[in-house]
Length: 112
Image (cartoon, rainbow, N blue to C red; front, side):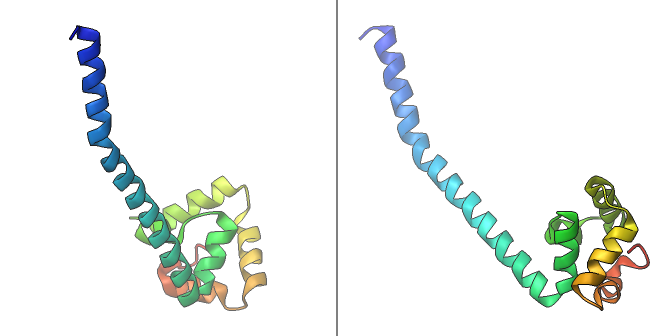
């Protein structure tokens, strides 16, 4: 066998061996996304105000709750959204009369 044939054989062997790993990685990533989506839905059922805030700001509730500094996370999200804090408050109060109080209970203080 010449070098070119050996190289092609090695590449086929590599692709054969790595193929199942690539498929497993894709399945793990899909599972991770499904778990994340389910958890977000469940969080929003537990705390509808959190779901409303997530929707208004286009953020993940999980990312928000896991953020080291939740207040800074929300402030950054408000800035990225292009909305004023008053607009965010208005949208939250439109969705639920107790949304601001509920968010305070989640530790957001007077930031919203």
